[in-house]
Image 1 (tube, one colour):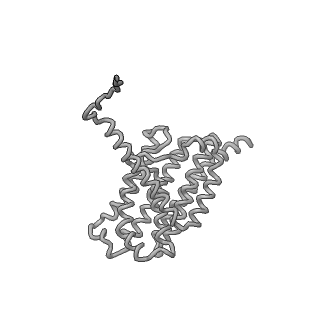
Image 2 (image 1 turned 90 degrees about the horizontal axis):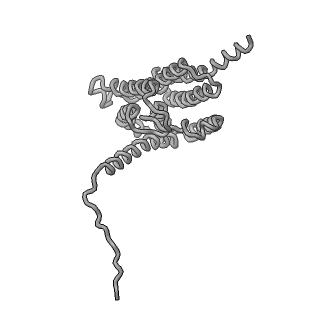
Length: 271
C-alpha cells in the first residue's frame, strides 16, 4: 500500500509543477485586467511560469513518469501562460488603454493583433505535440516561452523607474503591437532556434537546471529588465539572422558557376 501511495505521489509531482505554471499564467491575466494593472508583477509571474515549465518535464524524465496526460496538461498550461497571458498584457497596455492610440482608428485591429499572437502560440504547441518537429537540438519556430519572455522582459524594461515615461508610452502605442504580431508569426515559422534543454550537457547533468534557474531569477530581479530584454531580443534576432544566412548559403550552392576557372600549369624554363 505504501509503495502504491509513493508511486502515486511520484506521478503527481511533475503535474504539480505544470499546475503552478498554469496558475501563474492565470494570475498574470488577473493582474492586468483590473482598473490598476500591475504589468511588472504579471511579467514576474510569466518568468516564474517559465521556470516551472522547465522543471515539470525535467522531473517527469527523472522520475520516469512521462505520460500523455502530462504532455497535454503542459501544453494547455503553456497556452495560458505563454499565449493568452502575454496577449492580455499587450491588449490592456497598448491597444485598449489609450483613446489616442492609432490602432483604435482601425476598429478591432487591436483584437486581431493579440489574436495572431495567442493563436500562433496554440498552433505552435499543437505542432510540437503532433511530433512534426524532429528530435534535433533546435526548434522550428521560436518556442512559446521565448516569445512570452520577450514580451514579459519588455514590460520589465518600460515599467522601470528610470525608464522615461514619454518613451514608454510611445513604444507601447507603436512598437509593442507590431513586435507582438511579429513574434507570434515567428512561433509558427520555419526559423530554427537553438534548444538549450536538448543539449548533451543538460541531458547528462539535469541537476544543473536548479542553480541555473536560481541564477536566472536573481538576474531578472537584479537587472530590472535592462539586461533581460536585450537577452531575449538577441535570442529572437539570432534565429532570424541564422535563417537568412542559411538561405543565402543554400542559394549560393544551388547556383551554377558562370565560368570555369582556367587551369594554370607551371612550365620550367630552360636555359
